[in-house]
Length: 257
Image (cartoon, rainbow, N blue to C red; front, side, top):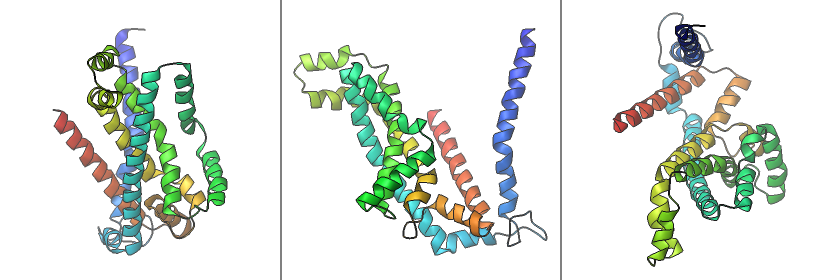
């Protein structure tokens, strides 16, 4: 088969995948401006009533703020713990550290429902059901693998002779880690922080298992809106999140240039 045919095949496949990911977002946009009280395209004209409802409804704003601050706390905790774990394993670099790395990434391999059931059973014993602390701990455990993987990837290019040179010049272990290893791991740390925040902000299965009424995150509010009454405010929330994501991505690309 000629090379040009391969190129056309893969380019077509790439565009199909992009369309599969983007087209649903384009459908959500007009629905968010519907003038009806149910999910559907506008009938008589565009309306911003559902955006107004989102930005004025205490329940929606409270759930959004809860997701944000929990996500930031989870990202901070997961970044600190995941970075310390990755740096420790990088220094050891033996069979035990390799086993520990594989054990840490098991949350990615286990189905979310199984994880959530485990959290529920254990959190009942600890009295953490329907508490912010319970959500933070569960999300931190889920986010740790993403941080550790990002930091491991960043440390791959670090020459092991550099920390050894620092130690031979009189630097303590802590000074070597802070002055040599951490700067090399900064890209992975930043990436891990972002991934940890996203994991916490978007997580829904675990929240449904370990919360009842006192804790309400934005994904939980969206889920309840779909279950009880398909509120077009959900489309407005989705559009706001898409716009924020696109803006953050554009800013990141522009800064790199």
